[in-house]
Length: 61
Image (tube, rainbow, N blue to C red; front, side, top):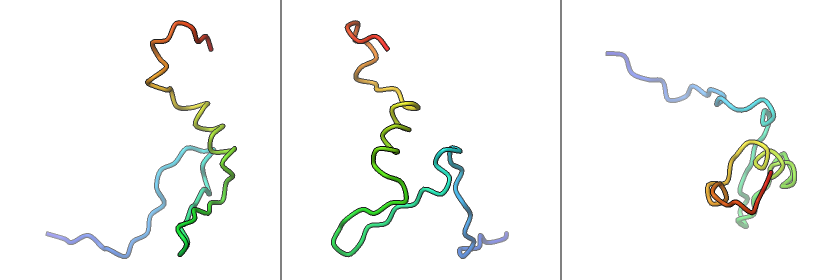
């Protein structure tokens, strides 16, 4: 049986709009990223349905 190589670094499969997105947490616990929060929220609003709001009849999108 062959063993998996631990040092192989593969890029994860990501959506085309998120290519190049990286984030890090510095020593102070602050999150730094390559995309702004506004860009991330815009992407999430466009591509992710909110489970809590799916049955509300007063919201029309």
